[in-house]
Length: 410
Image (cartoon, rainbow, N blue to C red; front, side, top):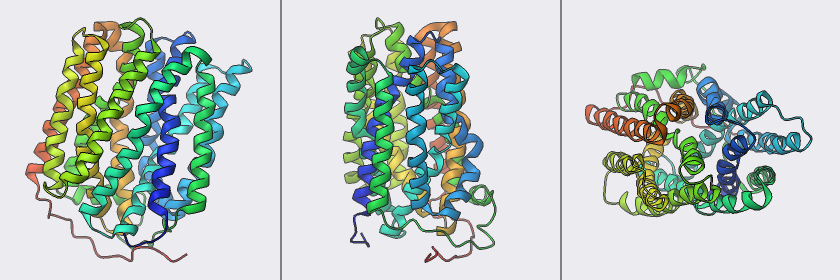
């Protein structure tokens, strides 16, 4: 690591703490909608509203990150999200929370997802240079910081919902964003504004790059399918616990925890494997292996069996995310990285809302079996498309983009 400061540990700490609150909310928010008289369809709409902004504003947000700088973008995002999350329980307690109001709050929260994640990852090349392997390993550490809270957050949420209800957990989530703000403010360095040139100027600069890149371009299209299917899991798990397993919030918490356990093991594994296996080969293996266990959930099995299937899925997810994030973070020129990253996230956002919205109607048509056929089938198709994209392009085929100055001093 080039820098001797605490930037990477601070980023990991902020991510781990805020992800713990978000992991509890991951259970609490859909459960809040269900127990407040909402239908599975309403729950799907709420969770879709959270990810929709990534599709609508993901591409323009790259210009925001470039103009403000990654560190400033992260600070603004945390400072705004804290009161927004707290507003849900406050309005509920005072009797002023309507369904349209909840949708508006969740939509505003989602507006900060793409720029925040892009900002996090764009700082890594400042620490490690353009070493794709090193940045992939650092991305694996981010995966661990994101997934470790999933081990404790949902299970704690499942227990606390039974004692306290859902609203207090949303207050805790708001507090974790404030903590992350203070950590980034005090310890994170780097993430400065980016110097633009003719190739990197404009809102669509990241999209233009992807259209020229023979690897990242087709790979980004597969993200629409993959994330469309995978995003359905956030709706399908609470629905599964509510309908198949006796309306037990503990079950939803334990299933999410099972994914976190697998993902932590996978995050450790991927850091070791990257020294022995090429990043893209690792991603191809991971993307197939992650989708196969989800077919088990189609059958009316007991919830511990579902947990085992989700553990296996989680084990292989870091084998996909770390190499792909390393590739996206280092392959484009420095001035384009934030815009390329947010363009990829916009592609994710295109599939994500549909993947969440379809769960409610699918459940009405065919129950939980139909829901999990869509999830497992969509991920399997996406895996095949991903492998086809990799086979068609050599990792060394980079588009002809002139070199640019990396960052500004101010």
